[in-house]
Amino acid sequence: VGSTRAGSRKVTRVGRRLYRAQAYFLNLRILTVAVSCPDLAAEFQAALSLAKEAVVAEVTDERRLDAGVLKLALNMACQRNGLELEALGLAYRAEVSVGPFLRRDIWGRYSLDLQRALVDREQLLAGKDLGWPSLRSAWISVLQEP
Image (cartoon, rainbow, N blue to C red; front, top):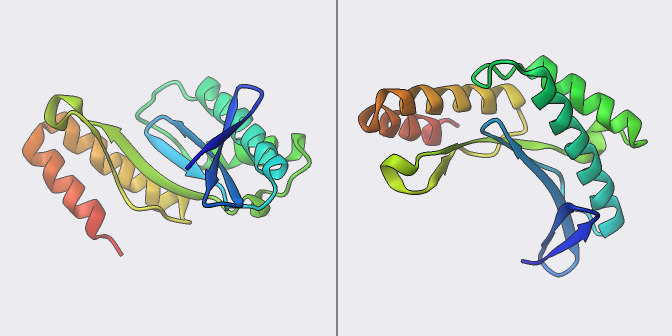
């Protein structure tokens, strides 16, 4: 796995000839579909970066990440970059740093359903707040979701 830079934005190489963009913020990772053109992946990355900036500026409580706010930011970012949101083929997953418990991050499954990823995110964050036994239970529950 390698990467190429588009300005300061990272585009990840997947295999020999595919590239994908990604963003991580507020305990949510977003991946685009893998594409054969690194320039297109860089355009996807520019849109994700713009959406990230907009969401982070809009959200006042990091614990409350609203799907509507994120979708609006993604649509706006795509419009500004001349892209259709559907073309990005987005997948989402919750990711939570649990250093005090495991010295690593934990995550749920990728989903095409943003709302599913946000529910997983909330479960993991709530479990983390209550300590290791609750976090472990929440993590298992998230991973067992279909």
